[in-house]
Length: 166
Image (cartoon, rainbow, N blue to C red; front, side, top):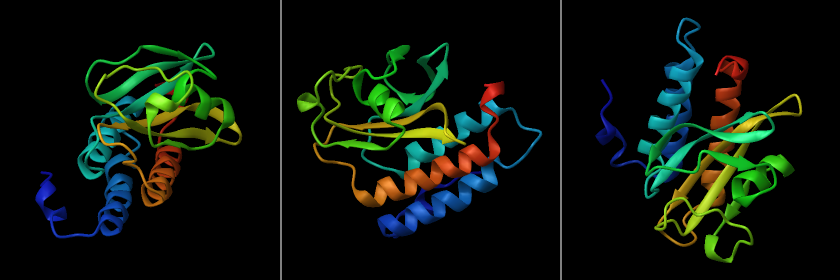
């Protein structure tokens, strides 16, 4: 059973540190499907990283980012590499934080309420497998603390998910 209230009196950094520990315990089982691992990872991230209106994965399929497990409003199903924030992060293979998506040239709007975004590429041995994407209704929502811990989150996911099976 998961009780989100255990995080109520923690600082942001304490919450994110605990998220990393919980994530590893949640997805390390080799008998669980890789898709299920991504679904649970998405749910945990969405629950712990508060004040976001969309959280999910886009996975590389046929040289495009294809919608994977997510929580939030319906989303774009395909994104070209290099297009939008997700495509740009995938192309550069580096995390991008956008404080105001309306000022980001080529931003792809799925949820009209989104105002800021963070995208972390999923890269192993220099090979791109997809991205982790979080959006928020707040301008300037995502900080360097979230960047650090979401990058650590992706490292844990890479360790336990075989993206060839998703």
